Length: 52
Image: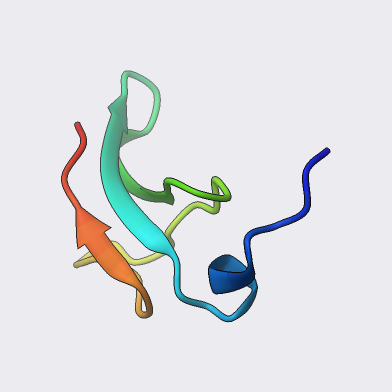
């Protein structure tokens, strides 16, 4: 398994909006795959891009 990107370790994730049939729409980091937890907007820290 590859090491987690430095930006992600510092909390500066690259948030993208994803969707699935099971979970609906959700935010995920494009670099490390961390799932966002906020129901009302993008998680705090990093940038937000729409790649749905």
